[in-house]
Amino acid sequence: MNSAATILSPTEQELIAQAQGGDRAAYGELIRRHRKGVVNVVYRMCGDPALAEDAAQETFIRAWEHLDSYEPRSAFRNWLYRIATNQALDQLRRDKPSVDIEKVPLRDPARGPEGRLERSERAETVRQAVLALPAASRTTLILREYEGLSYKEIAETLDIPIGTVMSRLNYARQRLRESLASYMEVG
Amino acid sequence: MMEHTHRWAKLRLQAYYDGELDRRTADRVAVHVADCAACREELAALASLSSLLQEAPPAPALVPENQFVANVGLRLAHRPVPTLPERVLHAGWRWTPALLVGLWALFQAVSWMTTGILTLSALGVGAPLLEALSEIATGALQTAEPRWSDTLLAVFRFNVLWSAVETLGLGSISLWLMQLAFYLFLGLAIWSWLASWWARERHRQVEGMA
Image (cartoon, rainbow over all chains, first blue to last red; front, side, top):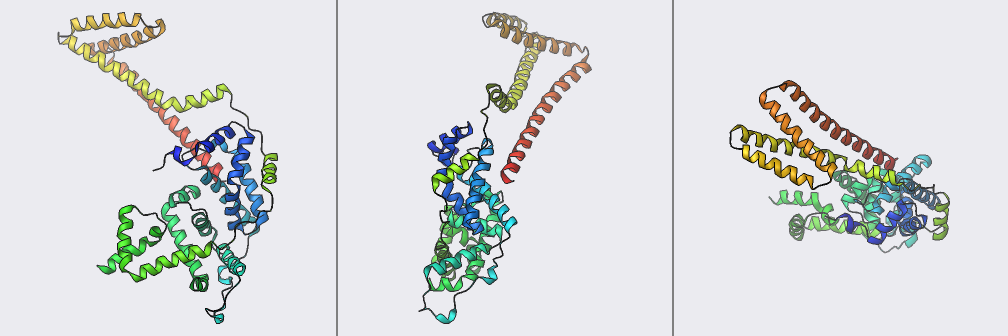
């Protein structure tokens, strides 16, 4: 079981302590370290890069406002992701994207195994398939497959039981396997 | 038996793939997978899906890093640095339950000690002991800081008096009530602290999830 000292590197721990004392330069360094991860999480949830940048900025602003409530028993990254996923869900509620996993274009089976798709087209199809998942399952899948969080970390980040993490992940993977079945056969 | 083992392993395949099983369970699943084509196929499908998912591109960088940090910095509210009284209050709040338990423990220890001494004295055994302990206690306390020695001596004498009055049966009900009031005060103080701690934790969770 990881202790708090092994979750945070000493340098990051120092930066957080300084930021909690009002040091904006220290917080700026924390933003640099975690910006990419936060933006990617929100982008994969929302699908819009501009929205993702805005939501990521809001994430860091809210994190600054509630920095006193952060405690080292969980990783700072995971605490940020919690705020980021909430920001992303707020964006989704406001903008209501209409991607339906049933309407994700499938590879034309008539092209046969010898046919080849452009990598960007396949990548875009995969991205759309993830966006078409229900928000709860999509969040869990993104944190696991793209950010590499453990079940326990996902449960803490989303404040859900580990069993719920497993069932949402299983559901997301099953749906994606159905919608991307032809790509998986070729790959 | 084989079917049972297969169902057991199938339920754990996802966790096995994600490396979330403990060593013993993972070994059992691995043994089954080595003999089960269906489970191997399932694991291969999970790996294939993971590989496919990685093809989805990450977010394009619309804003340079320095500009992003500057944009956030412009919108950060001023964070007041907590003053010394605020830090002391915050630390004191955290230490309150330990102090309350310590107060209870001190009271109990002195009470048991004096009860024991008076009991021995009542049995006719402890009178010399009682005198000797009183001399030692008084002598030792006189070497300490005056205010601490007065306080401790007062607690000691109060408990001796309390126990003596109890033994003589004088006002036992009122003394019992006083003792009850003391424990009620301690209990109420500890429960109040627990309630405020729970409220703070809930507030922090709500703020984090809002």
